[in-house]
Length: 309
Image 1 (cartoon, rainbow, N blue to C red):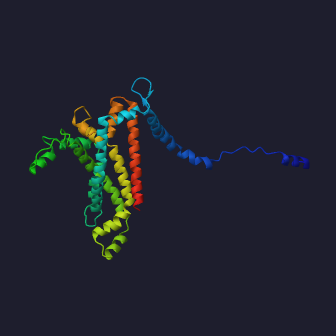
Image 2 (cartoon, one colour):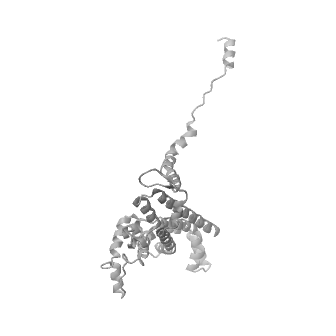
């Protein structure tokens, strides 16, 4: 090759094609299934329900714009207000009863004096792996006013039988009995994990300084359990506001004049409007209201626990 050819080849511009960099795009390829499924099964239904809340749409026909009339009708419906009150009751009772019971149960399971710890932990965790349908059906037998085990115990103690399944005065209490039995064990496992992560040296140091057991619990255990307590409180509130299967199976729906109306939850009301009466636009508006309530309460809980740091 002559000198001129070499100079010509060096002066010729090189056509540099952009190369596909696998190290740059490969991570996005591997995580894309999660975002695709998230968009299909969560993001799109959420946005669709938010938009559908402003329309009137039944099983047949096209949606018609309804503006805010779905929300206006919602707050004028006595059954909706009853469902909101019942759901608030379930949430407050769960926070004030289930959470403290779970914490006491976790303290007992974490005690050094307790024998057969694996057995007791498995026993308290068993309701979580049991079908909610089976649990509710068993409690229907326990609540039976004629031959139910609970009424038999009351009679043996000198009391009178209670019409758990018939009287509107006891329906919410009956539902809470199922909730307490079903969820206390799971929450206790969460608290137990938090208790076992606390260094034992802190309790020993506090004991050497003369702190009593109650003082060690108040000034050592509770502050270190705050993240677990926040997590448990949030999932309890969310779960209570979304309660459906327990009252639905216990009382077999919400027939007019039946006891189920006195225990109806907000999700039951949504289900009856959307699936039962096929008012999809109105049911979407109820779902948006429920989402807003859960979101606001979760923010309040985060603010309360953060402010107590």
